[in-house]
Image (cartoon, rainbow, N blue to C red):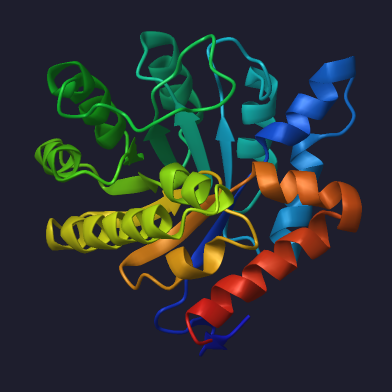
Length: 256
């Protein structure tokens, strides 16, 4: 895994694997199969550096029991994605994941549609970020690649911002080269700005084998969070091969 003296080589890009949609498949029929915790163990064996799970208010995929199991059974860092609500705050403080990523959430959406409005919701979010940080939980904010949102994240003293890569991925899938280049430039500029603000930079949402390399090559980004595509690809090649191929593309983009 390209390590130097037992630790990752300089410039190493971490991979967080989101296992939400393993739970989606399970919930489609009920019962216990397939198990998200088993997927987390497989992800670790395949080279994942962390596990991400989004406990939605409607519990459409990951459940409360899943979070308890993940926290108790996996050795990798757990990143809990959550809405900024009192219920989710209480759950986070009880389980104490390594990090909590605050995300916008609407009941009718199929997936997260955009970044959190940190600038507009600064006063509301302050209570949640302060409570999480006081419990030694790293605070991440899922944001669009926008200067105003990054400045607001800095004011909240967020540990991490996760840049929403969805617009870039959608432009690529549409075959719009000009828009793809513009969205990639936005991500690149935002990553540089976040680093100057002293905020750790992650990115995610919509990344695939075809879209990951240019984002992985942005030097300020230290972690990518990828889930839906990896779980979908696992239907054809297995989760281990899906993750190891993504890991290889990320390493190649970093010249490792």
